[in-house]
Image (tube, rainbow, N blue to C red; front, side, top):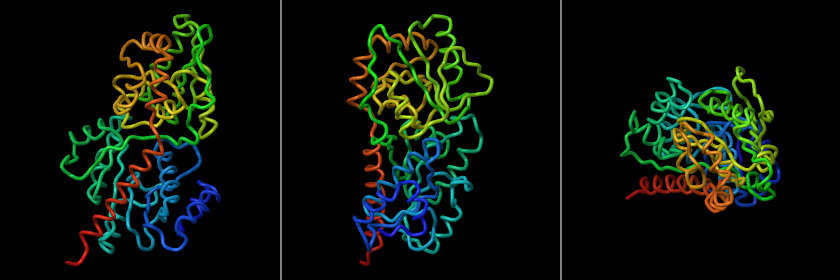
Length: 353
């Protein structure tokens, strides 16, 4: 498969073996050519990057030529982030210019952000401006779609909801520790961001409950970053981790705790769920509630009771999460089908009569 100018970064992220597998699918003519406006990285970088790594691998294996720039002839463009700089290689104005030269190209906009997530004031406007140049919009949750419809998005425009999934080759329940009565019940949470909206007020509360003996035989593992003001009393802390190292830590625990507020469609509880962990989640969590409620226990003001209930119902909740956990494979298939549909319908619309 021809990878074009993006071949070097794709090789670094996926490894030579993955490229050879993709090449075998279509050695001379790619199925289609797609450019993402963000370059993936193997470093911890949040859910958007994890989604991108999976999509690049999946489309490449299906015979698509994938790049991170607007060079050459493209069939499709995907907007991952409207903020040019760093890993984001081009923006809405670049797409607008390209479409003037190549009107046949289709553009899909994946929206996984909003101002409510981190109490910012500019993200909703940037997303609205970027969306003008697109043909189709994918939201990562119903909650996020409804949020933007109430502010700027026209719900009659072409759009879909595709929920996030993590890489099942990494985040899976095989080999996980099983909770047994009489042993410590291990809760875990992990965040790349140290923003308080990620739920650190609740994690600090749980840490205090454990230290005071109000959650006996309970451990809290905190992976990643946290606000500098927090001084943990009992929590077991780990540096930011990604990939197999992160998944191994998650599988050593018994339940995932997330107190994030107004989350569009976070990856952190998804990774926990795919490792077989029931979710203890905040009911103001936004999009994360849509998946967590299938195999978890919600709370708003009383996290202690939710933790105790999760411990009591652990076997039942684990059975539910094993049956209903998200899937990165299913997510990638859904996006690939959407891109294929866009390219095919655009070609049909341009067919001479």
